[in-house]
Length: 426
Image (tube, rainbow, N blue to C red; front, side, top):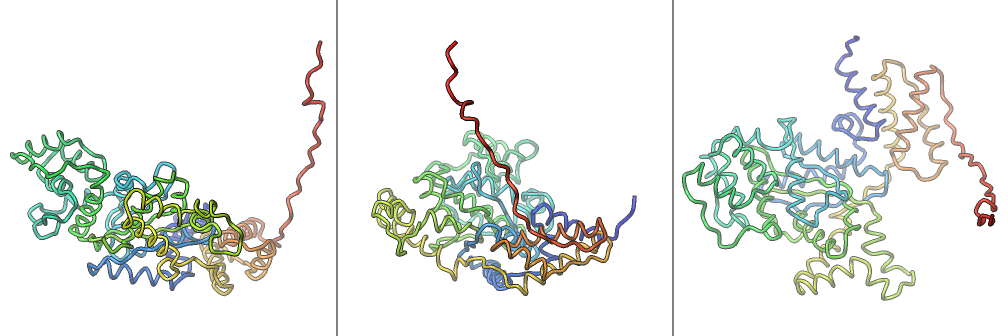
């Protein structure tokens, strides 16, 4: 088998990730940064987080195909390189954030650290000495809304074998029953677990696990916990009450009420359809909309529901949530890139293709841009796929490829009306 230089193997990995439409850390390193100002804003946020001053998080808005996921990958790459622990996940039917503890379990198992390829923090924990916990805020009374997670972490260092694994699982969101936790505490520490003023309830105390995990990550030597959420727009598919709870949880994770005492920074990317179709749906425009239609949109409906269930304070929290979410300074939109930046991207793609397949790659960038643009406004990924197709064909046939766009021809369908007629009686 031929042995390729490392540089060539890396170029192949980038080309193949782009061909599959899945941005990777390698692709963000090799392709030019087309949104330097946006990444610079987030880099400043991370600096504040590292200094112990958790900044408000951000939502990034963008249309389909405009690079939201790629931007999230770039931030993940930046955060890991800067020494932060990172959790990244996409919302889906199975993963939502209206149930905060269930969401915690998803982000906890997705934690990546700069010095390990294994998700989670078990390796990092095993390098620590439990006696050093006194130097962290973890054992500080009142640090969390409930002290149970801190006790579970402390018990982890005293346990061994299966008990140790089960306690780690609890820290990662797989809850153990209180009788089981008390048994392990008594067995491994030789004392009875303290009684709490109130029982631990996941609906009320889930934030304690988020806080404990963030503090534990800092204690293990990382600068903070960065949570990256893709496809936030799927929140809009939840029921009305679940949407209210999801918005409340997002508001807390994003630190928009400035109530986040833990080293957590949250960034989400959202399709513009959530803002345009669900949150406001034409409100404030010259379009005629009935009062009944206006009341169905989330920016009106959710604060009203919050007032019913939690009073004016909760209603105000939700009103501020929507205002912050559409504030362009805090939650910018991912804009179309300039022609000069697009040309720079495609030129770099040509270089990488030539490096990956060891040939003198040729690509008429201007012709490709003009041809794709003739089909209408297109997302960046369309230009990338078109460029890869032209380069692949040029590589195989060793000749210049003239890219053309043809309209698909569809055959006509003539139905036989007698086929659907009732059958004649025998």
